[in-house]
Amino acid sequence: MSTATFGSICFDTGCFWKDGSKISKVNKPKEGKMFVKCAVTKTQKPNKEVRIGVLGASGYTGSEIVRLLANHPHFGITLMTADKKAGQSIGSAFPHLVTQDLPDMVSVKDANFSDVDAVFCCLPHGTTQEIIKALPKGLKIVDLSADFRLQNISEYEEWYGQAHRAPDLQKEAVYGLTELLREEVKSARLVANPGCYPTSVQLPLVPLIKANLIEFRNIIIDAKSGVSGAGRGAKEANLYTEISEGIYSYGITRHRHVPEIEQGLSEAANSKITISFTPHLMPMNRGMQSTIYVEMAPGVTIDDLYHQLKISYEDEEFVVLLERGVVPRTHNVRGSNYCLMNVFPDRIPGRAIIVSVIDNLVKGASGQALQNLNVMMGYPENTGLLYLPLFP
Ligand SMILES: NC(=O)C1=CN([C@@H]2O[C@H](COP(=O)(O)OP(=O)(O)OC[C@H]3O[C@@H](n4cnc5c(N)ncnc54)[C@H](OP(=O)(O)O)[C@@H]3O)[C@@H](O)[C@H]2O)C=CC1
Ligand SMILES: CC(=O)N[C@@H](CCC(=O)OP(=O)(O)O)C(=O)O
Image 1: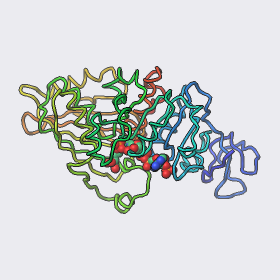
Image 2 (image 1 turned 180 degrees about the vertical axis):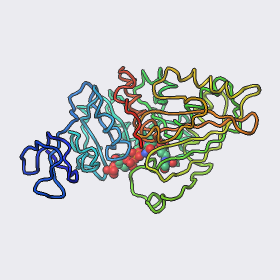
Image 3 (image 1 turned 120 degrees about the vertical axis):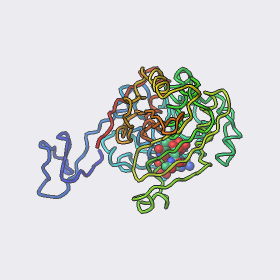
Image 4 (image 1 turned 60 degrees about the horizontal axis):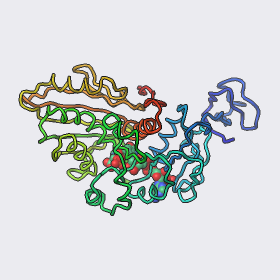
């Protein structure tokens, strides 16, 4: 049994004091002490139909998978890996997950996959191809890194600055933008989960491009991300002092999501699309907004764009076109798998402005990954994902 500190409040009457005596009343610090420790009633049990491995559970997206799976009726975690934090429990790496009854994290090289049916691979890009190549062949895999997203190997090598180490596997990888590629995801063994910026951009643009409602030239994407998008690893650029009270653009003209977005849009257009894409880092933990400037095709109106998005997503649970005039806000997707979007007329005739928001860690990563594994395993797509946004 592990222990946890909850300030002076024990919120679970099923808990025990550290000395082993049972707590019968909530919120009574023992003997006037400021902090009490209690053993926690653990909630996640790995005895479900599908046994899950989370590679990189000590990172932000891996821990978000653990959080989401706490309410999944069919998926139970039997294996978690970490690198520097190998040997630790999930509760020590992430105290908000202390209530989860899970095995300690092990290093990937010591991982035993005999009790695993499916894997969420939440590792840095560049490390993932070799690791996935070595996994047992029967496993279903959802890879959250960028290592299998680009179909063109030389494009991967150009933008990621390293050789592709599993070109054969690349051929079988399915790009997992669930709403748009659901049929392909259903029969996939290896899904390349889309990047967060590409998710927020492709969801609104692909249906408009497919319907020939916007020009394929001069697409300008101004995107903003919360800092968790950069992962949990300590970096000087992500210190509070560097991030708070200001914003900055980065990766101008050379961000690695450019080829991923262009790949999806070009496929929809059936011709090469080139975009202007500038991401920005925002002083917030979670959240992502893409503001997209487009030219409408001749004779097309804002109503046409609105109508197309409406019919494209009216049956979708997680993609929501807001009422006309309502501005999507990152606040309204925080902690949830929703993408909210809307389309506005520009002051310049013939142009439109599209706003799309997601939580980068949920629809932009772990939520969409779970959505994909639900589809791959034949469960309802929304299973374990019906979290409403956290507000405020
Ligand atoms: N953060 C986000 O919003 C999004 C991230 N992604 C992608 O998902 C992946 C994970 O991102 P994120 O969770 O943010 O990253 P983090 O840096 O938070 O976590 C990385 C994880 O990988 C482990 N790890 C690091 N290096 C190695 C290695 N060489 N071998 C094995 N394990 C290793 C770390 O272990 P330890 O901590 O113990 O050292 C940690 O568990 C990345 O590819 C990222 O690009 C995709 C969409 C959105
Ligand atoms: C804020 C921040 O640094 N964000 C990351 C993108 C995170 C992400 O989704 O990227 P991948 O899925 O491709 O790894 C970046 O700009 O590189």
